[in-house]
Amino acid sequence: MAQLQTTQRLALVAAGLVAAMLIGVVLWVLCFAQTTVLLVRHADRVPGEDALSAAGLARAQALVHVATKAGVSAIYHSEALRTQQTAQPLATALGLTPTQLPATNTQALADDIYTQHYGQTVLVVGHSNTVPQIIAALGGPALPSIDDNEFDNLFVVTICHCKRRPVKVINLQYSAVSP
Image 1 (cartoon, rainbow, N blue to C red):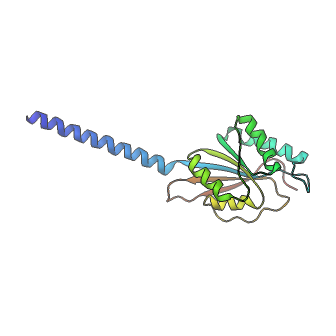
Image 2: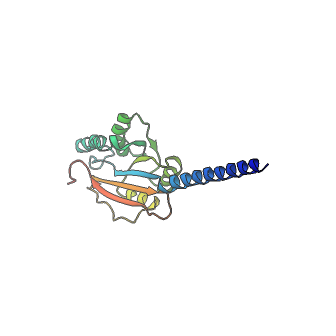
């Protein structure tokens, strides 16, 4: 009888340790999982038109070179042709179908990234006025506006899902320097 009670106690202690370890692993995953958003403005466009210029097409190809190894699992762009043309070369290279959302609905975009792409890397192609709004909707700091002739910014937004760590934004540049 005493042997049975000792065995039962040991089984309970072992079950408690396993449960504590599982809870620890879940908390670690929740606290340290990061979602990364690569955010660019559409590439250089033909003045007054909704299409990329030759320089813009070259910049879109440079984005392929920069982002191919980043582990991008989803691509978003607005309804504008210039954002589609910027995103398409990378989408083709990765075999992805981009998601189109209205440029004005930055909060829906942020919500979709949070719910559908937890712990993944996502590319978003926006506009000079929406890129700062998207960063803010993702929880990042307010950014200054992007000039009309500025196409070379690549913002890397890192979202740590642990509430104690803020969203981090790194501003890089890619391809040719904007005029």
